[in-house]
Image (cartoon, rainbow, N blue to C red; front, side, top):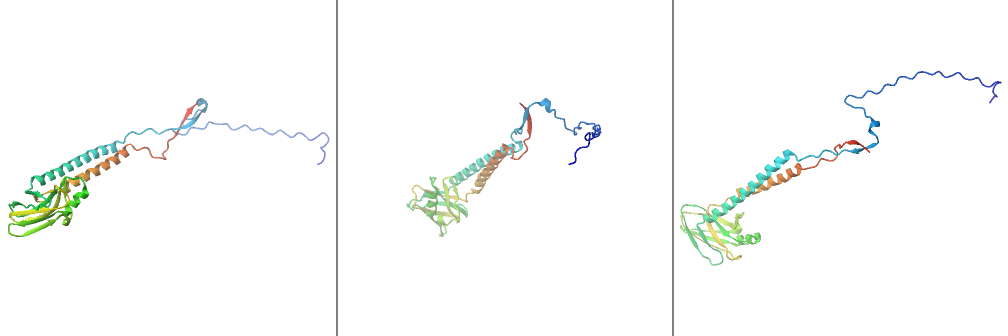
Length: 241
């Protein structure tokens, strides 16, 4: 590097100074308000909890209607089944024992029609009831000399209403009818003969419909008080310290 000239290096000329461009405050966006952080002081952002939601009125109304419908259907179905049971017993034209006594009972058929034989079983044991029904056999003799026989095990489906269960049905001509039934499973079981057949499907259908309505009521109750789903924006709020 060469030595400096005598008297040193000359002073460089001053750098020209240019005036700065005027600074203008940023205009706020439409619908927004500038935040004065100085006035806010020290603080922090905390999560803002969503407002609590009360019961949903639509689901609450569905719940009330479903409960009323379910209770009404079940109640009416039970009443219908009890009425059917009473009709079988009240309209019986003959009654006799089934405990090996081979007692023959008679009645008069005022016209040619179908009759149904039932056994009265005072037990809540369903397996015992099925055994008695399957073991019961009846012999029928008509006024014209013809005969018929029915067995509980041969019927497709036993109709049970309360303590009364069907054994089978037979068509009787007009005139006297003699019948006897026997089973060896349970003592104290009587049989009865009633015209026609019992209709229990209406009452059972009402009960099942009521149960379905109560299931809808439970679902509506859950939806009525269900919480806000996860993932929704809860937001934040500034809290001064």
